[in-house]
Image (cartoon, rainbow, N blue to C red; front, side, top):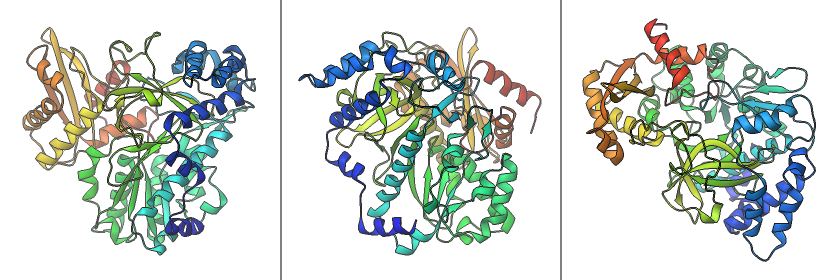
Length: 515
């Protein structure tokens, strides 16, 4: 990172960043799709969906015709459809299915949308794109007043195991494990916890080894999912009997987080610090590096539009999605120049890993069209609308943050489920905290903030949504559930909304009082 430090202090920007700064979003995205189609035109997928015909649309004077061609020839794909029809063939060893060559890696998604893990292809081109966007985000911190010595400090990246499973045809594991196993040579000196600890398949073993090594590291940046980073820091503080993490890492200045909203965790997290941190959000999905926060003054993230991904946006409405969050076949879709402010869109991605018009499951909202900045507001299947309350994941995170602030409690995890109640409906919240709190007070405050944030919820609370229930449980029960479901540590997240089989397994764990 030494040479990066020199670039940072000079305010150097990569060509791709300058390109995005001085090119219209439509032109960037049009060029990106053209490159993707040209590269994949001779794949089985490209031939079946007439990529060469679609490419003719780019030559027309009508600058929007290419998109009409694309939509007409390629349907919207869910994971189930693209996996069954295409990606599964790649896992059988067939080359050139949806992207040229053989796919060597598959990322196991955290599986928050369905009961089983998903196998997302990860190509060499995609790994290069992720690496390049990561450097772009690092270079974006040149605008902050950081001393030159800071850029010599370690970067602790807490992710999945780099000891990937090989089945004879391909490697599989967390995306974080795949990308970390490919770290460039110039970064290895700064990267912590290092190759040996990163390869540990057991999460508790990895945690303990990081705690033992912590005293020998000089960490400046921490990267990871908030819940797991908080657990690690708590263990380090307890092991060395510290007042806060800055007693052992005095140069820690930046926390790069992603995967889930940081809002509900922030209050508890900051109790572990000796001085303020800079918080930078990153949007690295299993399908690619989508966006990152490059300005501390903005809570939103800048969409990366020229690094191997073409985006489409589906208005997240009942016209386009059913009550289970499944996209309808005739759903309306828009490209980047057609989106509007403050409207929720489900995200479709076409990528240099061979995803095409693929519904990744995230719902976003644009906060600044000129800078193409957005926030993640939820998941297509992580919302509650039993009777028209339309409660989004963003509503849930914000309400819990406000509740924790008002009651001065540290909420480490939470989830919510819908259930029948007296012939109508209710929400059941499960809140993970080690502190003593009156459940009736917690219920009242949480319900109040939800009504403040969501008018539909407020209306339905006087109609079909008859009640909400709140159960306070140990945070350890959340971690135990994740362990039982093979989602302990790394990039795994506890689902904000529990339905069907997942709700049953959660209730079983609580009934058995397993910790």
